[in-house]
Image 1 (cartoon, rainbow, N blue to C red):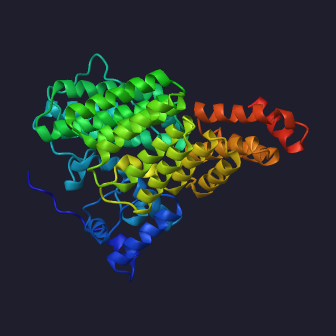
Image 2 (cartoon, rainbow, N blue to C red):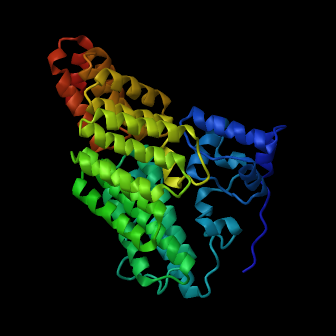
Image 3 (cartoon, rainbow, N blue to C red):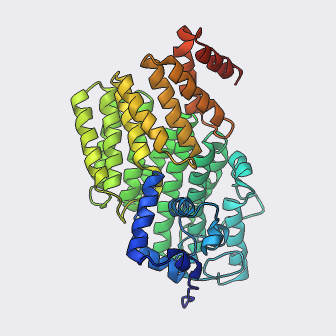
Length: 443
């Protein structure tokens, strides 16, 4: 099928003003750094936007552009609504009215694709979706297509992106159960097979990333056995598909889970396995994250020397900057996350004042858009301050976390705050501490 011509984004071109594409790309990278975001913007990317090839940016670029042009929506920057741009096929040009995917060959397959996309992506506002995700399994009167096509692969990829966005904004607790349903559908599609090898490759990658995302929701909501199962499923999918990027992602999360569940040596080994998988991918930021995962394991083993060596490696890799090969899922990994992961290492080594300095920097650097991470980093700060004999500051930080708990639903954040409250009980005669403890008890 011939490609459709792109409609130039003249609005975005006007916003660039007198800057050259390279100069404007530098401004985008600078704005990303201001909010702790990671993008690999260059003159070529700006050209793709202005030509209309990129009809809607990914979520990382969206946050950067909205930061650069406050008060404007994506439509004000000349982009199409995200709902009308689904998957890679959508960038080739407009398709049917509601779906930007290649036109199916028959009315029955078109109906099946539309039903499947609604099964993945139906839902209302972000607030409602945070509670239910709007992702429902196919009912008895609906059937999967005999063979999966481009639209099904795009639906799986879109489900991954939407889950990540909602987790960033709301936390995992309300999302996990609903997110398990499209995961089962994704693997059913894999079992059915695809119309071509390239589509099957996309389905493997998408289903594996979906397994990691659902595993993370289980992890963050305290369902550690479920998380371990989902991460293992993602790893198996990566191995079958020979997808090194997915394998590195699965090992990264497995290392994180092992550290959180007290299996420090397993955390080290998983991080090292992830580093081997990622070694040829050309992403220094991914190697930096895996080095931080390894450092967390060494800290759990009380091996200061090995921890410091891993931290130094993480900083070296991170300083090399973003790259085109950085995975899309790493949009969360900026300077704020680096500071947070380092803070956890020092806390595990018993240096709570040092940990508090890094946790404070993480909270200060974090883009407010990532409400879950703001709450997490501030909860870490509160705990570190409580253990560093700074009870009033800890109570202040704990109060900030309580302010966010109406928006963020995370078992992990609540557990951290409960530990802080316990640590502050001996200081309850302090007015600020007493007020925090009273408020925490009522919450």
